[in-house]
Image (cartoon, rainbow, N blue to C red; front, side, top):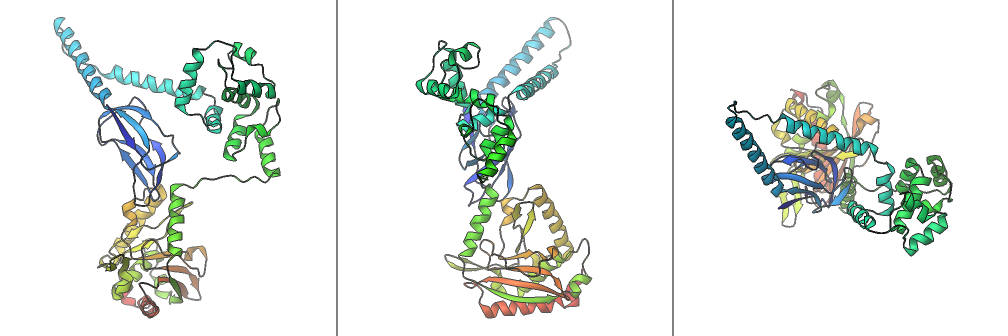
Length: 448
């Protein structure tokens, strides 16, 4: 019986996922709970497990490919597992009986099976190395799937030589190709179809790098003169001359960012521009207790004194949360995350420093989970280390507001509050800002 593993929905907003890497190969035996793949959702990279024992029959999605939630990404043959197990048991029993019949000591050496597996992997690697790199690129240009390859090969094997479809003949004449001669040489299948003519011609007259550029820029190979070899340089010159943009599909992370900022733009917001004294923040700054650590602690304390900053808005009304939890903007390369630091009012600066260091490592390795992104009511975006003096930030998800932290200028650090007017009004925002300024000058607050 076949068990299908589908692209999981790892968050409420996830519509598609990107297959980052496979942890198994076709033919591998897997058990319930084994990790078979890593998938990138709109918020994080997660591991995908199998919930059935069996043999990996097929991997249907390539690494780096994005597919909609619910798409079958792998097939596990459960029957294969049971028959394989039975075969192994039968084989061991035979060895035992034969050994006993010869009066020898009973022993089963399973290492040869492992060696056979190594040889299979090596052969697979060899096949990959000898495959034309242009093959998969041509498939994408022509829209050919693996199943279509199999069907075409089967069909070609049963047909007589020298046969081609009308479209194939017309295209061959246009390109100056002799179908019958090429079929006799084994360079075209029989019968030859239009797709076969294109594949032969493109592979012969375009370098692999040139074909890759055609794919990346969505260009038809037929735009270029027939009968000559086209290089990467020639394609690049054509792209520059005709001002052709490169299409870069949106990955799940970028789609999530777009959805978040679009949602934020629809909120009725206003801004409060002010600054806090930087003297004590800088005096207590160290490699461990960074300004960000103190900001998290500072805002967490202010949120406990102003309950409106611990509110979110639902269909049933306001939700007032008991603790101060803050989403913090963190980036690595093009990836942007808003992980949540929960219950800051119940944690020391030392504990916050530990959690911040751990989250930085998660962000760096792309291991932030959807659970890491939940539970905040307010956010912080700190660009002070970049030299930016002041900026506006967009509210994250269901938070009531966010603080944009700028760089220090003349002993002051700028703070711009962006607040959801439905939850926090102007007077409440001003009172919150006043508390922040007072805490920043309170020596007792900075005791570790």
